[in-house]
Amino acid sequence: MAVEWYLNQYECERCGYYWEDEWSCTCDDRCPECNLTNSPQESVDLSRELTAEDFVIAAASVEPTIKRFEGPSKISGAEDGVWVTGKIWVPRKTAERQAQRELERR
Image (cartoon, rainbow, N blue to C red; front, side, top):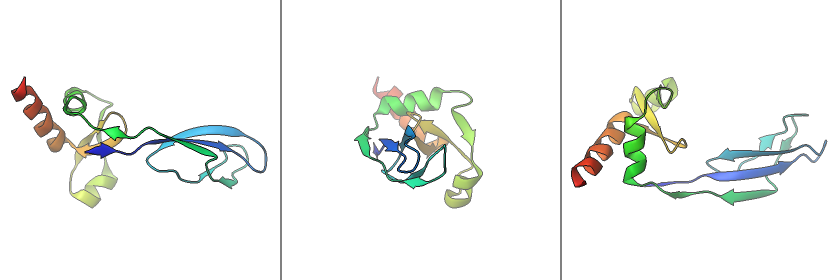
């Protein structure tokens, strides 16, 4: 399983304000100073394959890593999940199964 992640770098066309934002795509963002929509001037690809260790760490983490989500639960039926590497949300049961598999291999 891979996680797509980008560091987007922006400079506002109106006021010249510079900012960076990490996101799962190279998307437009609104300037924090003047609210003008801007496209990224540059995007650094931070994407990588998730490792079994990422799931072990996520499953073993305590609050605030394990969070309850109303949005994903309405979509997927999952009531809670974990952030793996701080960037991708997976149902907690999936993370626990991956963690168990990794522990059994050790």
